Amino acid sequence: MSALFNFQSLLQVILLLICTCTYVHATWPSILDRNKTGVFGVFWKFARVGERLSPYVSLGLVVMAVKQVWT
Image (cartoon, rainbow, N blue to C red):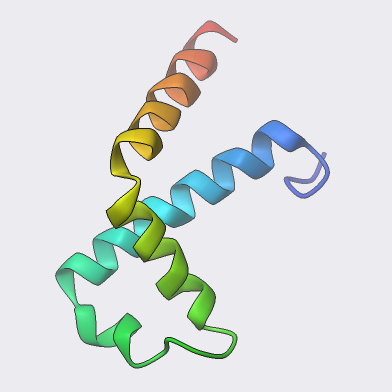
């Protein structure tokens, strides 16, 4: 089943995108800062969500990891 049609897999993809974009923005901020608008602006927005809501994102990752281990 595709990750687009399975809600749990879609949440995993979104959480991993948030973490990846936050890491890239922390390491190389110029890559995402020059693409704030347009199609690539989504990645900049994911990085902002990861920076501002990091406790909730980390809690979601812990829940995702526990669910993966127990499944």
